[in-house]
Image (cartoon, rainbow, N blue to C red):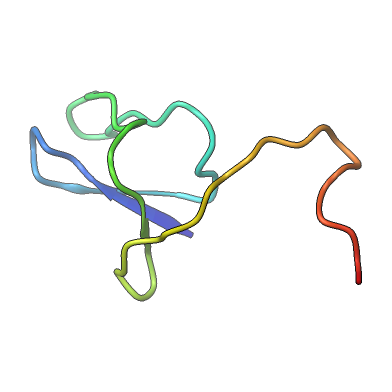
Length: 61
């Protein structure tokens, strides 16, 4: 679960997907380029997200 904070209405927004367009459910502002946080720990996430085609992804080692 991911969290972003709206810079306009200052309300939190939660999502299970970090790679799609992200709009604030309260005021409708575009939060796509805002910093992303781990919703449970409220820590900034320092990960690079990539889009994979269905069936692709990290392989088991």
